[in-house]
Length: 156
Length: 144
Image (cartoon, rainbow over all chains, first blue to last red; front, side):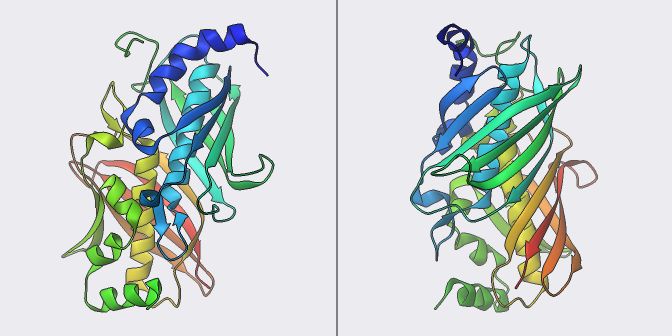
């Protein structure tokens, strides 16, 4: 677990990211974070359903949770606040998400070069070891993207 | 009537928008499906709640992914006489340019390969011109 001082230092970045319009629309909540790591929660809602016969949420919801949590983990792992932009995102959908239960997304930044960040993550429900989807993503660092802590960023 | 039977009926009636509208999530993000002379395409309507980046006012990458996945499924349904809904196995998205929230985002897909059990579909999304894609994807689906 990260120490409280580190979390307090990162808290403004987390606050800014969770105020983004689509984070709010989907109701994404940050449940844990540390440098280069984050966990998000998305509660089940009928308007997120992709298959009305089974009630399973749309794959796009899982994609959005994973893109969001990779982006957040990336910000929290950078030494200096810099703009980032998703370069690519690849997802394996291992099984349908269970109905009427929240979906969690967790990601970690595991390698960073001057211009590229490499992340991996997964989505799960009851058990962090039991993934419904896994992903790898790369982000460009310092490109025209989103920079919550830099010049022109939304200040807390 | 099952969902799939309803889809087959709407396909026979030439109504891809009707198929899209069966899915609650399409209403949440403003996702629709249309036909033109070149065939089927999908449209993600410009709406402020899809914004994932307030500095360059761009659509959230996950919603761009949702458009690409939806387009791939719709193209498969439209091209093939499937016996059930295709199940997505994986999706790989390349983000090429910012998708600006101020404009609709359009996408067209094509089935690269369809076997008995699996299909590979490619999709490109664009805003001002199809020659300048903002995102591209390939996806695999299990058919049986």
